[in-house]
Image (cartoon, rainbow over all chains, first blue to last red; front, side):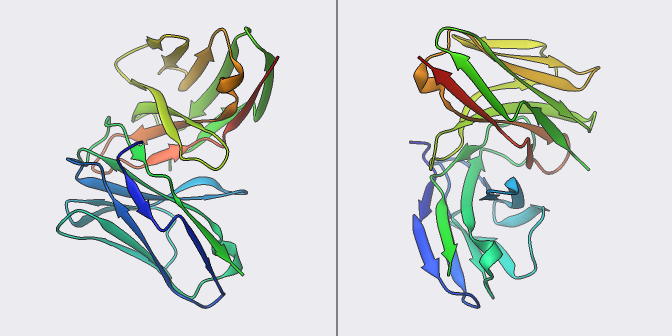
Length: 114
Length: 113
């Protein structure tokens, strides 16, 4: 158990819909990262939040957005879903915002678009 | 931008043999290099990491070496066991205000009896 909690574990929805993925970081961790894992793209960084503020953006689509709340949990919102959005979405957390710190991953949310 | 190449994509070894996975990175300012093990349908699990001021690090049967001049790092697993079978990902992190990880494409390790 990494201490990072993600809900739900599975999501099945249709094209055009909107979903919200939730992540609670490990106790004491202030940074949250979102990654997307698909078969053909591997693990891709989406976005990082540190203590409530956006810190870095990766290959995140405009249809996707995220935020980190005062209690440090984070939500990833995916809208106007397309078949290609089907993937595993992982959240990771680390203590701070700078480099050299281990990132620990949650169990992921498997998103299936029908 | 940051790019990480990983080889081989698949690796099959017999139980008890050693396995070596190699990665190269493009950004010379990278300073943190973790390795993750991912079993089918599960989360990436951090197994070992190395920082740029260190050339080698060992943890029981697992070791990682870093050559900053050549910009490559390797994972070495000795005395492999069937439970070592998984996909292994290397990653690199760029020094800066953000700490995102750039991952390699993964190596599927199969340890056969």
